[in-house]
Length: 98
Image (cartoon, rainbow, N blue to C red; front, side, top):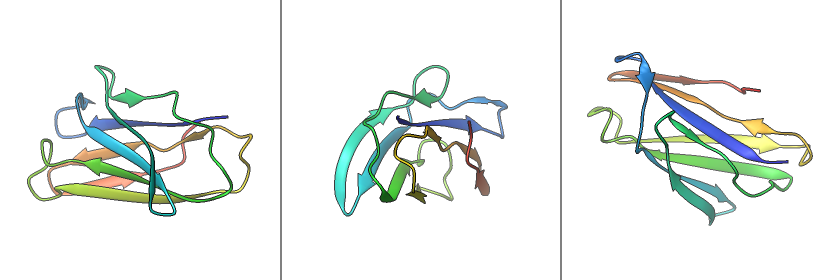
């Protein structure tokens, strides 16, 4: 299947457009992109089993968090993995989406 993400600017109550994000596994960059008008990035390569990282360059959205790194484990490469980021000036949260 695929990996996707989206970034929501919780302070403004809308998607965060133009946020650079890269997908890594084992220190290797697998994909890079920027969030679109809906705050999403989709269509990244099918994941392999193992730990992956999404690295968000959030400096344009939050002065306090210039970068957010989310690590997650893929145990079923046939499943879709959606990892959203909800960002505000002094906090962020995430969850496994659908």
